[in-house]
Length: 521
Ligand code: FAD
Ligand code: MLT
Ligand code: ZN
Image 1: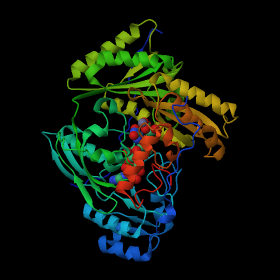
Image 2: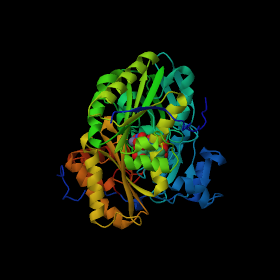
Image 3: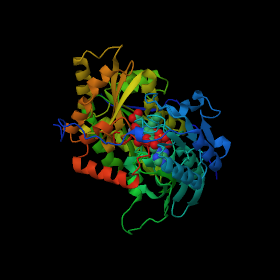
């Protein structure tokens, strides 16, 4: 069952309107300890290596500037989604089977060649592209569903399956992948697992640490760790697969994923609410949770500036201009249930109550009344990353902080940049925020005219120290990649890092797996 890439459906129809009557935790001063392995201990791919790879793979699966490919052919693999991180790999290999991956890795281990596993290359922390000239191992050709059991809901798939393709596959089986994100048209399930992606419905389905049941992983010596169990329960000692979830390709290459999918909701609704002030977000969240309870599946926050950027860059408009006026921020609420009538009743009651409240928590609400409107509301939220990218160069901080501090973090960061004289069109154009309220995950985006050392120096360690002051996390869901290796100690204590390094060394003593990611070189 080979799967094809598919695109995300977007629609922008108007919807039904509702109107209301109206200290650093630790460290900070310490310099992070450095990880001593150097890329110079690794070897570059040579023509002899290519000759070896050509015994493993067909010619079409090898792309190398050492043979017929041009540098332009390699560009999509050497540059990340944001065009912020750039590698200079000479060679991309695209295996189709786990055995081929194993043979490639075995050779790289013997020759000490660095490997960067690459999925959809949609990661936002520079983890998926080489730092130097490491070999890129692209999983895109491993795109088959291996099995699906519609009684248990257990899906076993190749790591290179695109997330949207898996959703499309499950549709006629009345199941859904327990993960959804704006990059679904390109990101791969192996990449999702390797970043422990959170996404838009973690509130409903929980993290991949819970829904992934098993993995098949090619270890850094080329051996195949088969933990592809399709068991819901398996308490036989250490749960090794958990180590690879969120390891960002530093411990091995995920080649197969067994995941517990969920029964497809029979009724899905969503609505966009405009709020007069950020301080209403949490009281609203509590009320929404109280009233919608088991049918609530998403509660997403968008600040006014982020919303305006989405509209400006063509991601649609959920509310009329008059209704947007006076809004400080927006919340997208989604329900997923099994009885349309029951769910609509609950939503309508919630909206009525919100509108009758005095003072009201919301200015306006838009309830989608058709699938097209449903997609249109989601398009605004899912299009934020792209809008920010179209507006300028984004410094993206994906942080966990207490939910009531989202606005404070945005304001403090904006004020700090202003105090450095950087809040103007030729430097920082906007500081915008959006995120997953239910998960305490704020996406702080500093949108600049260009990536410059001056802006970076103003932001770091400032932002990380701020996060540490709130006892938060410097990476809620995007990972460490290359972007945050130096900042790891802001969220992990010394003993934790020491043990993480021991684990890395145990699996990958030669340091060939995604060197320079998670830990500094
Ligand atoms: P890649 O970007 O290719 O790789 C990411 C990391 O995983 C790299 O370190 C890479 O080496 C490693 N890796 C990839 N495949 C494998 C494998 N098979 N085995 C071992 N290691 C591997 N993230 C969220 O968490 N939530 C969101 O809501 C979200 N929304 C996004 C929206 C947009 C528009 C974009 C561009 C990104 C978004 N992201 C989000 C970030 C990104 O999409 C996720 O991190 C995603 O899980 C990455 O998958 P990928 O296949 O593109 O992986
Ligand atoms: C999101 O929630 O939209 C993603 O994590 C991507 C981003 O932070 O831009
Ligand atoms: Zn996110």
